[in-house]
Figure 1: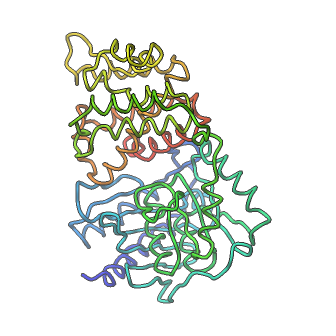
Figure 2: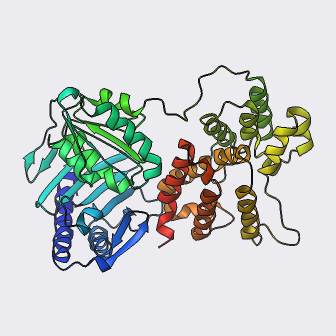
Figure 3: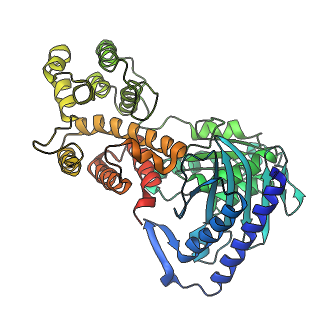
Length: 459
């Protein structure tokens, strides 16, 4: 089936789900609402809509897997993935406040092949397929031609309020009174469609799921707009942020989004000799080793951990400990060798990151005992120890999200502990133990990624 025909069929499925949502809204009770996380809600309507959509899409394209918000379907290395938000704007829906929508996209690798967004309240269906243009109910769409001074912007408020509050405060401070106006609509999918239709001139949001923005992002691109992540990268498909504009104001909006944050990497020049020696030491220790289940050289992980620590501090001993953190546990280096080469403080920091075996028990049988001990140790540890640990754990979470998108549920087979619910417990406890670092962007990213990867296993 060609993309145009497939898009038409998906429009019908989205409309059917929208009819179900509309009917349920007429008899909806607040007692039906469940709380996923703070200020993040779900109801039987979200789940019922998702089941309807998944069933219909399976019949339409049996060979495709799924990435869905409510987790009623998954994927296992399929080349094609349906990305589904069965009810985008649940809080709006609960309060009978427009807009709220159904969002469906088809993803192949990092390419969005088609996108459909059906807005329930106004009975509007927005859709696009790759290379085919963008439409609303048959009407060709095109983005606006406004410049930044007259632009109507949509700046949303994601559920991760602790992480995003400093960002939105800065954006309002810098943009309010300097652009045409600012709005919030409560639905990422609809904000993107409104950019495509020229109703908004630009939109930005962070800490959101793929299901929130995938379909709408393609619709913007096919309507002549520009879509990137917060770093200005054109491949937005694997992250949790999106910036969409008419193209004219993209660089202006990105300048405000990428302004230096209080905890970004320090600009001071430091003596990097210890860090350079640590990098050489770790590279030699991990030589020839790849990350489990991948072909990526293992050294990439401690180097990323060091970069994360570097976003918090310019203390070279902490940076050295970050790049060396796995050499004892994974490369068989003796802590005494670390002490001789880098001193007592670095050795102590590396030793604090080392996971000890439980005598008389296998590695997998002792998994929860070891992890609980690590959590308890970290909760009582110094800020320096927590900073090094955060570098390690955030790097792990970034890799886990990437590999989950690539491999689906199969990703858990890479680990000795193959139960994702156990990993969810562990990383939730880690986030609690590291919460004293909540003043850093690194912790906020870590907490958001834990939500994104593990919430599906905690329902």
